[in-house]
Image (cartoon, rainbow, N blue to C red; front, side):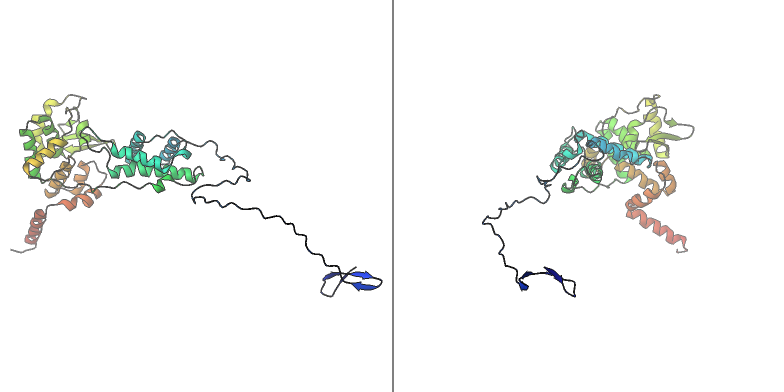
Length: 354
């Protein structure tokens, strides 16, 4: 029979001949069967494990797995609309990267070790003089960072569980050599190059010093670029592909007339270009000066203009810069200490001191 008490609990009991009888107690049935043994499995924390009794994951909703090259193109497209020189920089990075990285594989197949091999290939690449083509800073910017951004896109879209670049160290970078010669020292060095009989290197180096242009602009310099009535030379800044003009400074006029004008042929390069780096280094060593790179000649000219009290805005314009901020922030640090003392002395004289 079944009854319930005031608490609502139910009770089942047995009644025999009008008397309540306790229910018989029964022991639980136990089988002498040993429990299944569980095999201990040690799995690396980074290893994806798919239990055999679970269904395989469905295919990625977006379809086929893209190649690394496709992701790099998508990354590049996301940079559209930025400043022209910034876009040119990214295109240059992709050109460098594809020289060392095999980009036609599905993005899921790349490992951190693959990337290390690609970086090592870029690090080991040398020019005909045995010098590294890419310095550490360039490898970090053009290869490491670009790959990191492409794999981050793949990770964001669930194609890969982690970014392989997270395990790849960046390259060590060397401090940039910002040393430059004083104006008189640069003139001595160029004369040393000339006396050693390396005329073409001498002409290239002197052109870059007297006008303050870089190697790319000097190499691209061609007949038709000199505006004699305007007293200026038209250059194309290679980083931005924008046109800018440089005046024919008084110290450059005689050189341009004597050495450059006879070479001017419409549409043809003025220089039979040979990299003048080695000639410059040899001359510096022979004269006991600190070795400088070719780009330092441009800095020498800028400091010379500053010390001639030229308007900073004009200097920036003649360098093809959009404004004077770079000139003020970078080149002001290289003004000669002696020049600074002379300027302070003149300032003192101007306040009435005798």
